[in-house]
Image (cartoon, rainbow, N blue to C red; front, side):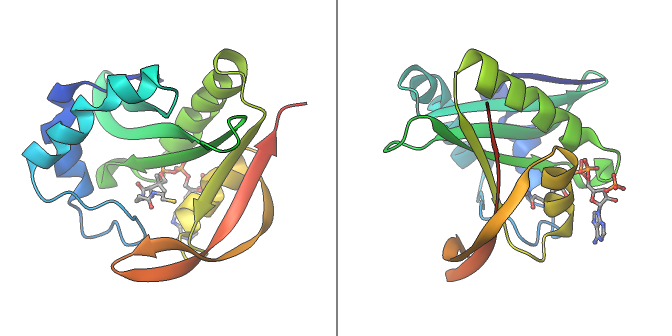
Length: 163
Ligand SMILES: CC(C)(COP(=O)(O)OP(=O)(O)OC[C@H]1O[C@@H](n2cnc3c(N)ncnc32)[C@H](O)[C@@H]1OP(=O)(O)O)[C@@H](O)C(=O)NCCC(=O)NCCS
């Protein structure tokens, strides 16, 4: 069973371990130490209160296996961007797809958002698949939208709207 819960500061070690996997080829986030991750997690509750970001741990069979979140567009507050990552050893079991479906329910039903976006590099097949399996539509290629390893890269825009 896949569940979401708010991230805790004590998730820092686990997230650091998950994020420092060489197979995270197309992911923008790099964390240099557990302390840096802890510092990031400390800001979560303030960001939530200010309506900036809603970040969750992905729990599978009681274990923390990854994370996902919604970042609110500060100029158009009805729009949220979804992001996610999962422990390498759990890839391919549909866990992220289930997590995104839960996240979407929070976004549309609790936060009242109207539009959700997922951005990824076209080569990030697993992420494209997650978006497609969750029913997001490809809306186009955003030129130089993603900064990774000091290079601006094109990325696909997937989106879903609430009617
Ligand atoms: C993206 C990510 C979260 C997906 O997690 P996951 O739980 O494995 O995703 P799911 O199992 O729900 O779905 C992935 C799908 O992609 C498929 N897939 C993965 N790599 C693939 C490849 N190279 N070619 C074809 N299909 C691929 C899987 O088989 C699965 O499809 P299926 O259910 O039809 O078999 C995980 O790969 C990850 O953490 N990557 C690193 C971080 C990252 O890139 N995050 C997204 C940034 S936009």
